[in-house]
Image (cartoon, rainbow, N blue to C red; front, side, top):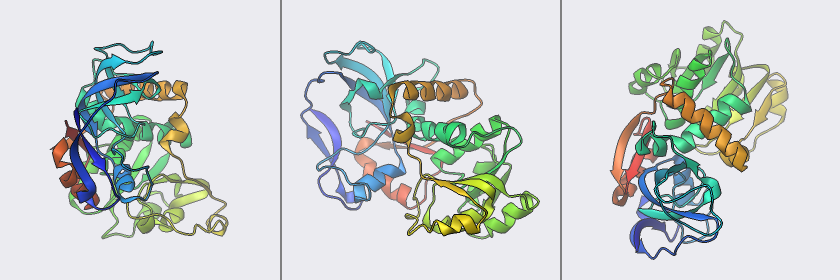
Amino acid sequence: MAKMIRVHTVGGPEALVYEDVELAPPGPNEVRIKQKAVGLNFIDVYHRTGLYPQPMPFTPGSEGAGDVVAVGSGVTEFKPGDRVAYGTAIGAYAEERNIPAANLVHLPAAISYETAAAMMLKGLTAQYLLRQTYVVKPGDTILFHAAAGGVGLIAGQWAKHLGATVIGTVGGPDKIKLAKENGYDYVIDYKNEDFVARVKEITGGKLCPVVYDGVGKTTFPASLDCIRPRGLFVSFGNASGPVDAFNLGLLAQKGSLFATRPTLFGYAGQRDALIAMAKDLFEVVASGAVKIPVHHRYALKDVADAHRALEGRQTTGASVLLP
C-alpha cells in the first residue's frame, strides 16, 4: 500500500483525498519510484476543478523527484538506486508511484530532490518558452507576466542570463522586490499601474518582440498592445481564467502580430526532445545562473492547504509537497 492523493469528483481543495492505494508492480517499460519531493503547479488546480478533465479517480501532480526502487520488463535506461526526476507525468501526489520510463530523466548529483521537484515542469516550461517558442537573444526587451510566480522567477533569471532586458508584471507591491531579485530589470504592479503605458515608456515606444502571458483573462487583450509589429504573443496559461473568444482580427489591428498557445507536452513529448531540454535546464541551474527558490513546503496530506494558497495567489516561487 502507498499513501497518495486521489480525486474522485471534481471540485474545490476538499476534493483532494489522502488515502491508501494498492500499488501494482511496475508494468512493461515502467519504473517504480519512491518520491522524495513533489512539485505543485497551477495545472494541478485545472485538473482538480475539471478545467482540464481527467478520468476518475485520478492522482494529480505532474512533477517529482526520487529514487528508482523497481523496474518493469523492457527497461534498460534505469536501475534501482538511480536518482530520477520528471515533469510531464500525471500522478505525482504520492509516496511511491509507477511511471513510464520514457517520462523520466536521470537527476545529476549537483541538483537536490527538492530543487528538481520544484523546477521540472516550471523549468522545462521556461526552457521551451525562452529557447524555442521565441529564441531570446542579447539585446531583446521582453515582457513576462506573473514575474513572481514559479515559471516567472526561473524565466527572469534565464532571460537575463541570455542577455535580454526583462520587464515583468506582478500583482502587488510585495512581489516587486522578489522579481527584481530574480533577473527582472523593470517590474510593474499591474494592480496599481497601467502596464501598457509603462512598457511603452520603458521601451521608448518600440514595444517588445514577445510577450509571455500565463495569466490569461486579466492581462488580455492589453498584452497585445505591448508587442511591436509582427511580434509574438505567447499565451501559455490561464491563472486568472481563460482568454475567451479570441478574435484573429485583433492580430491584424495591433500590427500583424503572431499568437501561439504552446504546451509543455507539445515540446517535450518526444524522448530525445525531453532529454535535450532537461540537459539545458540542469546545466543552467547547476552553473548557478538560475537559482530555484523553494518558498513553501507542505506535507503530502496537507495538499488542500497548498491548493488554497496557490489559488489565492498567496505563493511566490515554488512550492513542494514532501511525502
